[in-house]
Image 1 (cartoon, one colour):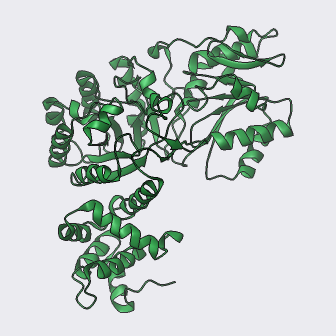
Image 2: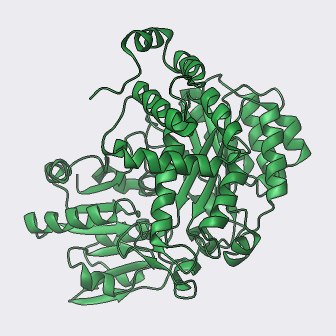
Image 3: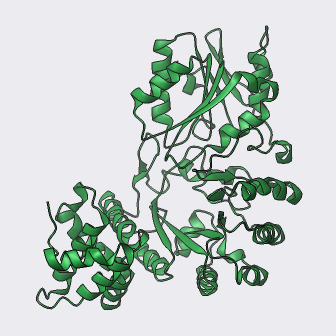
Length: 502
């Protein structure tokens, strides 16, 4: 194949939607094109060997914060092995670079910046031309006679003109499939790249229904909508959800990123009685501090979010995922503790504590000095400290986030945690104590099977509760363990004891 479209995904179950879009718009050039995806868990040697075996003339990489460093290394190695191959990069991680990017990375020949579908097809026409005119390709950064050229940006395309990315390539049923029914976001959050695309462009509802019909027929496990705010338009979101409910195949799950404040009475009525597992909602809270939300230009009404989560939990059957971001402006360690408790007390099915990354092209990165940000200079550009929270504070929050992932998000500890938190009265303080103890004991140095997490938690609770002879949590731990794994493990623990082995 002359052209390889490739990337490194963060996990095997993920798939790259951008590559499928590019393949779908390539027209007759698809005959000379192939897609192959790897993951960041593959070794460089493995990926390099596979890339060499393809023997392509043009390698096109889709670049993100989790893979850009690896991709640049692979591009350099490919150029050393095959000096005549061409390397093209695209994606959000290279869309805000200037000419200096090509000077710093001589292994890269072309960069497509911004939306790629239109520029990529225009590029292909020139690439296969006997007399290429790359100046005509909007959004292209390239070399010509040892001179770096940057063409004018490509205006936003008509989204409805982009073909269904799954028309030409079959869906991989063992992976999460990504689908985009709208581009852009009506909100202007200063940390998010979506704030740059100020116009929301939505596919016609008839087109969306036709696209979704394919997933329903194929009985894929999960479809993840990548729309930045799925319910920005109440009527439109209701129509799509009605269709998914009416055509429910009893198997497929749909992940939607929603704004809790925008849910209407009609949404709640529609969701009454839906099949458990049909939908899962991700609600980005990010902070409950009004000053912080104002600083990042984010609308937020935590009272309305609270009402939405409580009503959705009452309806039941909808997996709820809530997010916070640590390291935002005007939120110190103490105030983040408040945000943590606010969200934790809503008892979502999953609670993710993320850490601020100052992405290229975002307003918050441009204003980094205003808030005293120090951040990593290589992707993913995660914040190290700022004027409001120390590096030590952020590291401690990472430790706490690890405990939330191990003991809350993984499930299986509900009865025990509820008892402990009723005694503690403060979720953040409990997880902070657990984290400090866990790291002090060195448990972070190895991976633990789930059974051993119960042993570790019991050790902590004995110390925390201060009564080894009469540990009131044993019955709850056994009940949680029996339900999460099986009763036979409990019998073995009673026989062998709770001591952690090894």
